[in-house]
Length: 307
Image (cartoon, rainbow, N blue to C red; front, side, top):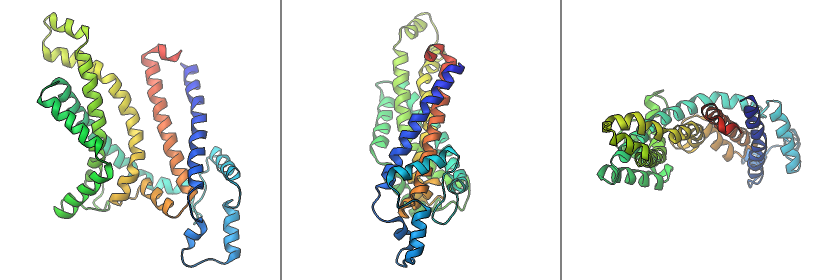
């Protein structure tokens, strides 16, 4: 198991390097001058601009800038923004809001997705199954920002049930609407996976054998079918929490939640590449760590995957 763990950790290294290289290249290719975006219509003296460009290596070629970034990253330094604040400090301030939003959405997604998926699987080719399929098609087909803007307008502006922007009411009330928007969009994938997995298990020979031996339908479903159908679902759920942390970027911008997603949008607007790459790198590492934990869990359950 130790060798398997080391191999999986070492496999993460080229992925981090490749992901950061692509992210850095895309940020480097953004049009416009970062210093001009910082100063706006009030340009700084030429000497100050030169000093800023040298301090942030903005005059260096792309590979040299990327080399500086990776050297700092290896030493645990995500760099500083144009106001001299450490990027790690900015992320630490915003991270709790993003984590609360993603975790709330993940729990709601778990409830909604599993309930609809199990109901659709048990009612295969009947009205309940058709409802589950329509639900998944609608929420997989409609873009998330459209659902977010519609929910914000209806429940926040028209009905005035929730604050349409901001988190002044604190957790959980201020997070419910944006978390529900994220949950409904993400639960469509979970419901489809759960339904398909459950239908496949119900068609297996051992389920037919269980029913032929007189096992009651409820006992065969709860004790055998659901347990086996949940194996791929559990794997998906482990990775989806990391994915929802990254998916909070758009929702935070729409609902004015001061998380790392809103910070990234502001950094893109200000062309602060250090902040953008720092946040993106952190999200990549979080996703890889979750993926590693899922793989290690598989390795413990099934020793064959360690080979």
